[in-house]
Image 1 (tube, rainbow, N blue to C red):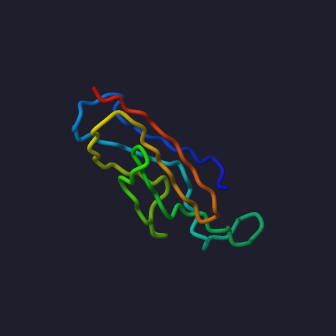
Image 2 (tube, helix red, strand yellow):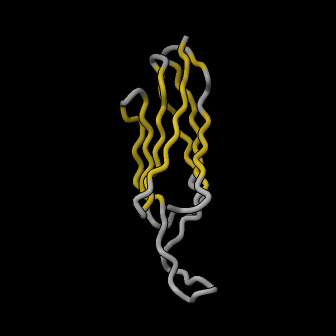
Length: 110
């Protein structure tokens, strides 16, 4: 598991039924390519790259992104979603080393 990984998301707290909202996500992750050497040991640093990002709303998939090795450190996503009812967004990031990072945010629809 990579050190210092922190997922952050911004979802409006409230919306009206049928509104299209903007969601912003960022995960602090160094995205090690597996091609650089450790300066102290001279050994190749193991690859640690977020290779997939998903967002679900009340169990239904909203976005599923496959990331390639050329992605920058601290991947940022901004996308829109239509919210028909109150519920919860679940965000998940998948790391090459098998680690899974997730967080969730609720939204109230009135």
